[in-house]
Amino acid sequence: MAIYLKYDTIKGNVTAEGFKEWIELGSFQWGVGRGIGSAHGSEGVRESSEPSLSEVSVTKMLDKSSNDLLTAALHGKPVKAEIVFTRTKSGGGGVEEFLRYELSNTMTSGYSISSGGDRPSESLSLNFTKVMVKNSVAKLDNTGEPVSMTYDLSTAKNA
Image (tube, rainbow, N blue to C red; front, side, top):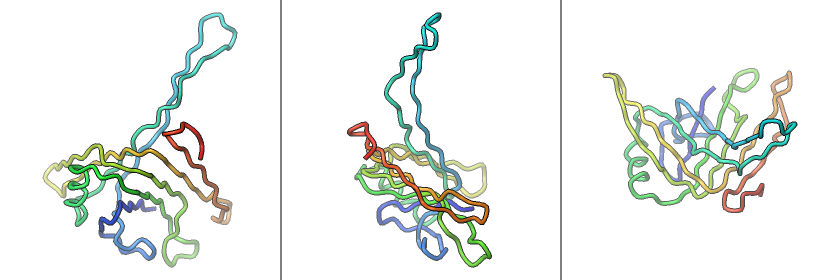
């Protein structure tokens, strides 16, 4: 499995068919939270807050995209970003996507680089205003129909 990022026109080192010059990621983290409270003795009555969507956090190794990603963090231009999870096709012969995130109006809110004496690793935080999530639900034969959902933070609704 590999995770790839397409961030505006920034070119990375990926050579896989269909993802040439995308940026290879080492990790991906994103989540949704909601505060839920229940009063003692209320027999299951609960109150909840609006959902809170975290920024997308990714890590990657230093590569040809690094200076351009740093520039994006410094200048804050809103762009489109795509993150795709891939797997080897059944029977070999390339890769196929099974999970996709499309982030609209994306800005890099955080950039850091670290190294323990080996190849430097970068961490990016991506802030966005709309997210589309699409996945292929796997069946036993590793096929599936894609399903998707979109959430717009500006309206706090599914789009």
